[in-house]
Image (cartoon, rainbow, N blue to C red):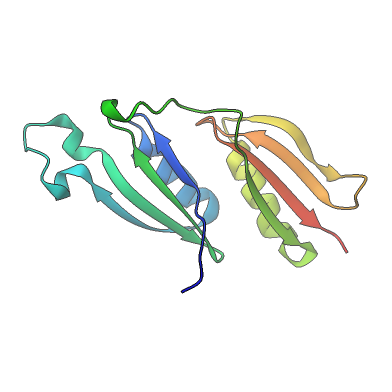
Length: 138
């Protein structure tokens, strides 16, 4: 088996909402598991939180979960960005991803032709996740 690396995004009580947002942006297939499926007591409100979700789209994969209070995860951060890359043949799809992620978010750099010849843009989505989209034109 080849070694793979997948981004894992943690949210604070809103992973389900984020999953639906990313599913709509990327047209992703999702596999969702809640804490309640794995022995969380029935009277514990965290039973409805997302323990693990896998999103698959266009050959890519990433994971999402809610962070329980003991996890200590803080929302957002400037120390990481997710980069989506493709070629001219993917331009329509990648532009759609950029525009979808931008809804309710903050575009830092609009999609435009850059000195290196690619169409490139950067944004922070409404959940505080930083994204770069790079479309090679050669």
